[in-house]
Image (cartoon, rainbow, N blue to C red; front, top):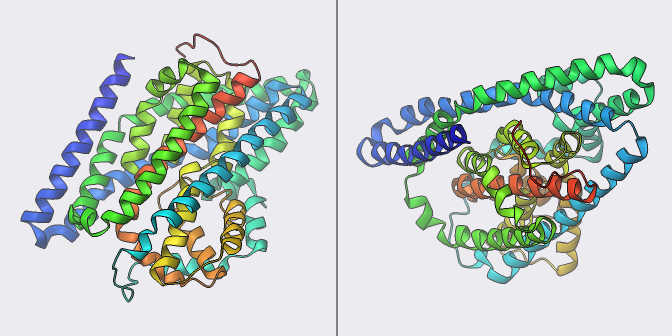
Length: 416
């Protein structure tokens, strides 16, 4: 625990120093902003890439081992059904909160932005041309495990791992035991790597924060104050609901869980990537007392189906863009949009800006100019901080809830 506190404070100091360094460059050396930002953010890139390096093998090994150890196929189905029930309800609640607050607070009706400035959105807009049901299916079902590994397609890896794990579970211990043991050792070796990589996190946080502050300065908060304020109100309500539900399930242990995941929450907040904390989160949930086979099964599924913060933001941002362009959408249309987002958001990677691609695609579907996403790009980094942290909280609670319902949550927890 002492080492954990050292890392936590190192990340906090990196966050503060990043703000200071970025502000100095922005206000005193404006001619060096572009060069400084492009170089300093490489620190964040190094950290993210190091984490992405182990995501695919970690998801594969832990998920296969988790399912194979269950051995009882009926248990796999029962646990999976409970998880999917949580994911669906959480998704609907998150989407509805975003829809309610953007209609109530109407940030798009009071913010005066330049509708002609769509710079920076071209790359995102280009993704909408390929968006279709066929492409969505291709995104879910892998044609090659190696291709899924190479491109870090988490949902495709989950699909293969679940099928492979079930096959091992039905093969009989005589044949499956050597493979399960091999993958179990591999999973623990990768988790050992997590400890090394996490000490790169402070450098990554410093680089990411310094780059965005140097480029945008603090004025970004005043320009988009209304949008950011209203989004944070909606996010706070989502957090309140998640914590209340968490308290009903975990009781007083909720505070212990929050202490356990404080580092993953802070890293997700600082780097705007919930994927970056997946390995550390898996480790901390096991230390909290969740059974390894439950964590190994539920957490990878959560990263594909349970991104609460991202989903809340999707309805909020989509309707905001419609408001900016003066497009009035009937309640029925908004409900249909919510259901579309419910489907298309599944499987998006927990990485920065992934949800913006879905927003662009959805806007194009409903006659909202997809170029409008450029209007929220300058503030999106700060919104992404909040929604990434919320994704981490939502997946932590989902895993603990299923473990509790299955009687697989150790009341006292323990160190790994």
